[in-house]
Length: 266
Image (cartoon, rainbow, N blue to C red; front, side, top):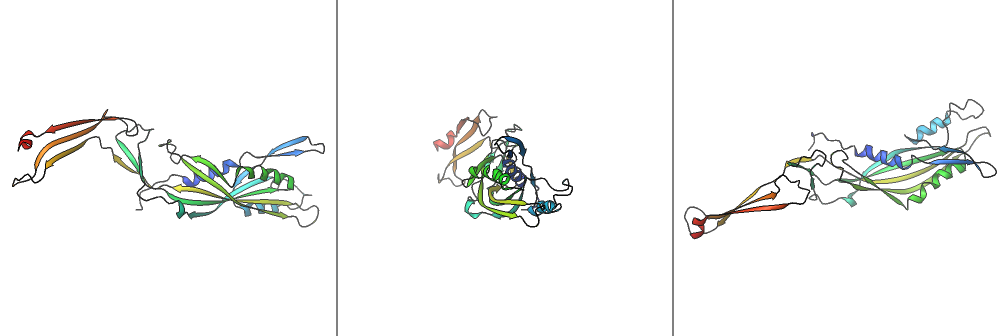
């Protein structure tokens, strides 16, 4: 079972897909008259929440050099869990075969075994120094999850770009934390934490096999009364038309019948 190396980069692709959802969010600052004074793109990074909280606490005093402190608002996300989902498991005999449209090899096909369903938990943290910045970010996310959002992934984009699968991302909850303690000069940190569940499938190794392009069937008359064996009546040969056709395209068949007259007469 183990020993044959394969790597479909499924977790890597899932992380990139999840991060791309929140990589283009902005915060707009308004003056007292309601006019826009600035527009800030909210940075997004992959990393544990504790790491960013520690960076924020490195510079708690706003009266000293602010270059040391991490700038807010910003976001971070991380994987929190990976678990098997038995409710989505397909039958183990539901394998499928594909020939590669990239290489153009019509003589062989790859056999894909039934993928295994897993759920990946993600946590998205939104950090801001005031409520309005944090709420702007949160309200740009929530309307798209009711409670799920679907994306399309190509698990094998290089060799099999025609194979696609739908990925569901479910928003499971939202929590709020306002760590506003200390003096007036102390830095305020508002944190919204959104938890998500991504439903993906892991594929195992593929098996390459030759394509059958000729089938020969021999027809016998069983119990013909002879001592040695059954009597061969005819031979049927079936080939695709044309012979070099791709197995995933439309094609016909050529059938050849060779009748054994001596056997038929007996």
